[in-house]
Image (cartoon, rainbow, N blue to C red; front, side, top):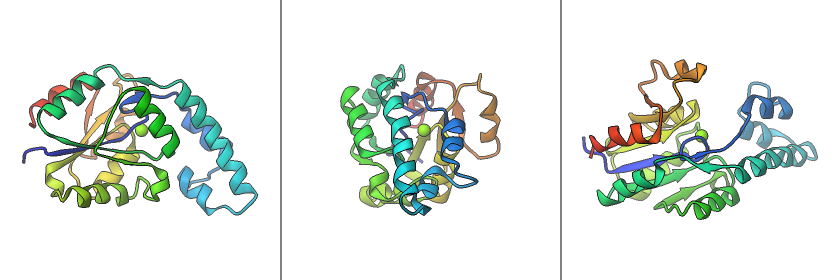
Amino acid sequence: MKLRGLIFDMDGTIVDAPYDWPRIKGDLNTGGQTILAHLESLSEPERSRKWSVLEGYEKTATENAVLKPGVPQLMELLARHGIRIALVSNNSRKNVHLLLSRFHLEFDIVLSREDGLWKPSAGPFLHVLREWDMPRAECGVVGDAIFDVQAAQAAGIHRILVIHSSADRDRARFDGTGAEVFDSIPALQDRISRLL
Ligand SMILES: [Mg+2]
């Protein structure tokens, strides 16, 4: 099946942003929950206090984020082939738009957490498929985290492409998920060019 659309994650996928997730989760004391689900489950004043802790971490990471090498070339290739692209991030709208404008990136659809659809739920990916009126078999997901893989699986999207350094010890977490794992954006581009 030919590829006609790609849904990208932002942090860790197209930009390198220095998040220390174990530390952040520890700081927020999320227990076994995902960060966003945990924050949403709280009542005031704890809810506001913890949201500002998260936003503080996000602000620092966003300020220090850099575009991954090869992203402009990949976007050029996709545009040349008429591949539709969406960005789905659990980050805030403010941070998403800040980075898109800083790195001169444009996506057909941009969803952030304010849209109320968070990974690992299938919600944001199903929304994109509906907007595009595209069969899931013609769409792929590009991410860096297990949430991206889980959201794709929940949405029935089988083409799952993951950017993850082979030097990372936790790369094994993608074993058996059906995701194809790449070391870098150029390696991913090489794979995508064979799907077009
Ligand atoms: Mg990510």
